[in-house]
Structure formats: structure tokens, C-alpha cells
Image (cartoon, rainbow, N blue to C red; front, side, top):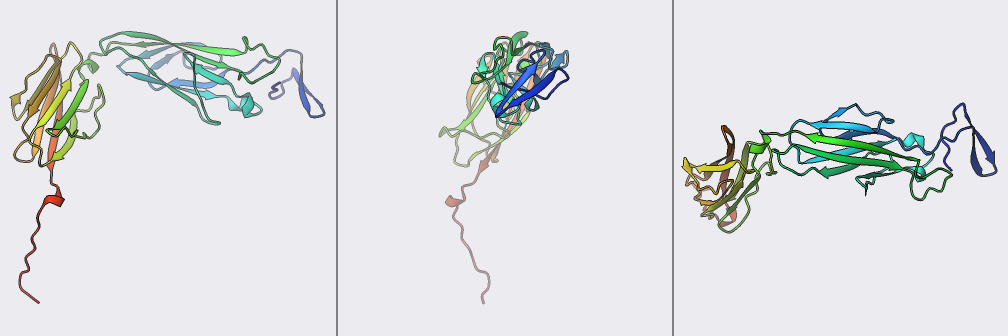
Length: 274
């Protein structure tokens, strides 16, 4: 049985190596969290351990939400009494002195208004054989997440892949992520590349447009899959756009040709003599 710090209505009786709690009122198993937060969103009300119902508002589009839960480690005599924690019935591990961290995919698109319920449960460990009521000694934090429609995010690129005619992928910097807000990317290709393939997509109903050196590439509506010629100057600049109604989001991409020094013949000529 777990005993926590004495209170005025609790006293300890020690008989040999056995520790018991003599209580005028049973304290029960401590199943409150010390802290609970999410990577995004405004909480209403602000978190308090004994409050279990929350509304979380996301005013802009995020594809996933990370939950961090702080365990009240000081409430337990040893690690064997630490609680188990689940998020939507999925067990979430944690280390002594560290928060439990769990990421949830929210789904949907920026054009959707999303409402998602998240249940965080804190309960005594299954190995714990105390005198407490296992069903009663659990705290359930109910989070209702609302994500508002985000028209600006709806114009962010959904897909961006560039490869050369040998199907070598161009590594973009920074690395492309779906619906990222980056507007400038850099990459490089071998000087031997004769063609570049651009694969680019927007979220429907946005229209995908792209141009190279002022020439527009054919569009398939919300996507583009086209081959382009590298610029003879060694640097190819592309502009891609997602357009919906009167709004546009543009991204600039610069691809430079690299020189393979292993294939370069170097001749040294000695001027004068010793």
C-alpha cells in the first residue's frame, strides 16, 4: 500500500518492516497530473490538476498535436507506484523526472473546421496491489480540440519533388514538408544532368502553376508533373504557385549544378625554373 506525506488526519504505524497507513479517511491513490499542455492551442480554462474538462482552440492549421504530461513524481514513495498514462487508450511511456510525450495526427485539411476529442487517463499501475478501488483511483482529462478553417494554409504546397534525368532526387534545403510556409528552397544537381523533373501539388481546390525562365509549365489542375531543361548558366530558377480565387502563395526554388572534381582534368604548367 502506498503512503504519501503525513497530513493532520493521517498517522503512520510501523510494525517491523511493514509500513501501514492508519487513516481516519482513506487518501486514495494520487492520480492527478502536475502539468498538461499541447504544442499548439489556447486552453480554456488554463490547466489545473483537479480540473478535468478543457477546450483547446487552434486558430491556424496544424497537421499534428503533441501532448506533454508532467507526472507528480514527488507524490510517490518510489517508481513502482508511478501511474500509468494513456492517450485515447494508447499507453504512453515516460522516464523518471521527464514528461510523457505523445503526438496525435489530427487529419483533415486547412479548409476543414475540425473538432477532435482527446482522453488522457492517469491511473494506478496494474502491478500495484493496494487497498484502493482501482476504478475510483483514476483521473480522466477530457480535451476537446477545435481547429478553425485556415485559408492561408490551404495555399501551402502539398507536394514538391525534383529529380534529374537519372532519377536522382534533388535534396532541397530546407527539406520540404507538406504545407510548409517556407518560400525559398535551394538544391543542387550534377553538371551532367540533362533534364529536371518537377512534381508539385497544391491542396484542392487550389490550382498549381509553375514557370521556369518566364515560361509556364503545363498544369493538371491542382498538380504539375513536367520536365524542364537546366539553365546553361548553371543555375535553374523555378517559381511555383498555389492559387485559389484571388489569393496566391509563391515559392522560389534555385537549383545549382555541381562539378565532379574527380572527372576534371587538371594540368599544371611550371613557369620559369629553379
